[in-house]
Length: 398
Image 1 (spheres, rainbow, N blue to C red):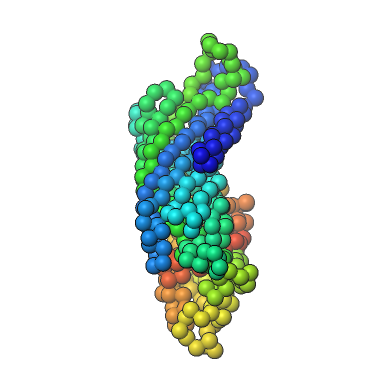
Image 2 (image 1 turned 60 degrees about the vertical axis):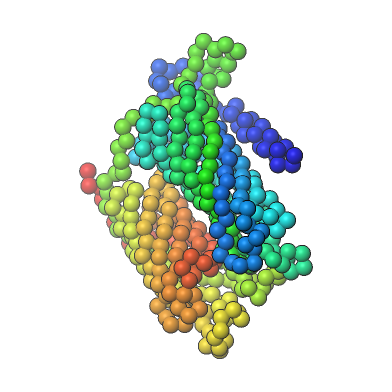
């Protein structure tokens, strides 16, 4: 009953957003007149992928969730929308269970998402859909009352989801949604323990399309003027043909805990300094490589590594290469790096990764948030930083 009443409340809240629209008062002959909106509901179910040993029984029955979304369907008004095959974007709410609710709680998440169409047919389209937000209402590790939970150490965590699937047109307004999902909850070792919760499974739902300007044009019970519920998509232009080369200096900080600090407020301040070269092939794809200087005081004060503490260091030089996917002012980054020192490889593993999201405030100045990992994909810390392009050169190939 509690979950049902919560879903009804969220549904009413989302439907209340539908009254918002543009201030246009004159009906246009343009089939793309108005603001194209949508509301969707999806059911999720699947399997948990746990990397520890103590929670196998508590996670063996999988997970289930309900997800509500509302958003906007682009129609090419902005140049980048046409380049990326008219993506959709919005906000969503996730609520469900992950295994035993007495151990993990009943997680909820608030997130933003963007839908990138890969193919767009007359009735069916396929897309990739990343989402990023915050998870809360988790039941964390507690030495006295929940000591078995080595997956989550805090009530709050980062929510990340990646969906791949399709959208089948049933009628003028309604689409059938289907696909596969990967979902991850983690606090990035800000609080320990933090093995994280990983889920993969299937989703099924429905999406309702509508024109948010309809009530301003004709809001009668039986309207004579009915606006289109979906936009008419034109030909996709693809990314702009440009070349860009830049060298930037990036500085970020984060906080971490050791396993020994679980259940306490003790933490360490970390630092990431990066000198990086980036090459953009066009406005969509780019590559990068650079040098990293990581400082992690927690590596010196931990008992989890079987080394002499007098030999432990806090400075870890590294190198990395990466791929950048760009849209609007945002860049989704995935980097893979290698630790250069022997002590770095012993304490942190040979390799690390850095998935990150960058926002460019100007042509030279940007902000970035990312997850720095260790020993492959194990979370090390969350980075919050800013960078400046010391060298910048860009030209068009058209």
